[in-house]
Image 1: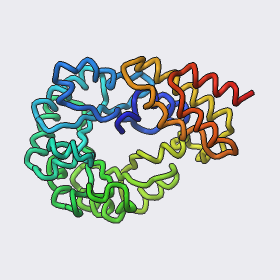
Image 2: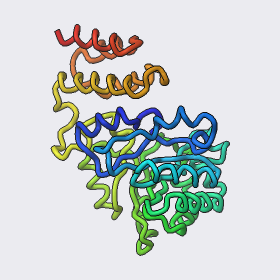
Image 3: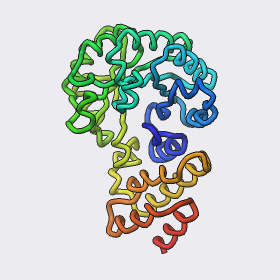
Image 4: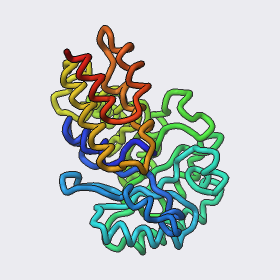
Length: 299
């Protein structure tokens, strides 16, 4: 997720309970192949404890995907994922994200170029069920590309996140993929590890990808299956401080500190007084102010 799954947040997730595989934020291939690439290289930072980790790219130019896949392999990533699912209107106008649904041949060309650049590391695709309506021909087009894994978000671009994910259709995709060698990973509305396991079993899919669900519980991937509410206030505030420290260390002044504030609700919720503390945190401008507020609250 953009401005979410950076190296700082991934370290927090690892501290709470490691998933089977991690993904970077989605990164612009065009940006990485431009003069501004130095600013984007931090998006590709990862540490040894994050393996297996996949570099996620978006764009619409096969030649740039080729170069970025080569870079991902050189940096030691375990795989490359092509984002063909983002519903952002600007991205669709560029012919990227789910906008590639309009140009299935270009989508296949991008996959081929990425596979060539990636060499012996696997190339997967993440997508939605279609643009304005469910489009299984689009899904079949991707399956025909013989990719090792297809991650399917169970909504169309038009639906955004306004309706429940169509898990029955994800199940249909799993049937379509039978005997193709492509693993099907479902995504959408999964709010707990146990729910993800149950969905996978119910619909015959090979795995679950979690996005927004992590905002409700940083301990999502813990095998202890404890809800966020079972973790005491000190645990949550310690995580908040650790995340803030990691964010500042990683980005310094290159990213706005305001980006950190979207995470504070993850940590500060579920107890009396949490709302007032969140309001205070929304007005901070740096790490020191965060620490001062937390220390006053703890005392």
